[in-house]
Image (tube, rainbow, N blue to C red):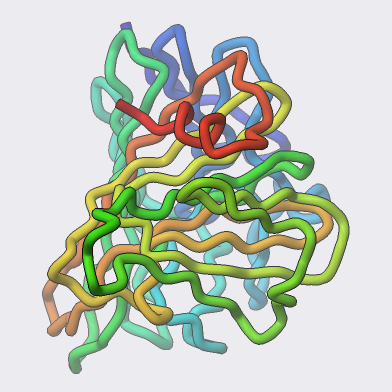
Length: 294
């Protein structure tokens, strides 16, 4: 039976914990919307938290905090880096909650995250919403970013396409700060593996038609699934999954399609999170394929 309760967490006084006996999740309502903890019950948090910012509120600068957040793509400064350091509204439900951020003053966008945890599954559904509360249309895409602890391996699938097809079915994009010969990236039988390890800043994106990506760390697989729309246009040269890495963390990111969002309209992007135990670090294509959700 899923339980929803108010707690304090890591210095934030106002948080909500959701637990179904298999997995548990914590959101803070002091800032955000942010999901700050996701774990197997009695296990360890899969997310990285910034010790310098954890438990803090207020301020005029954007803070990493860690955990899971919602942005809107494509990335642009200062548009993307609007501070989310204030209280968010929370509406509790029987199996989760809905978090709503105040309207961003410079963009006119209101962010919301809705969480629903089913009974009896090591999984949770995360709905991401962007609403245009401004006075003109904005082109954007929902961008769901999970900041994970260091030391694991990200898995990004390529399509398992028809070898007789004459047209390309996959893409991999590199940011200017990424060395394409970086030894932390491997290509194994229709999958890309990214090892989180010390090194230069790193970011790639892929068109991930199968609608999933994963991060395997310390015997645990954090898998995110989503609906991919083959008719839509995605940001960043067609990327629906992105991996960003620094020495101390790895971001596993999924994106919804680009839309022209008129005043008063809302666009949404839903992820389903799964957390599996006893999973070895992937080294081969077969290892990577075995992580794919059924």
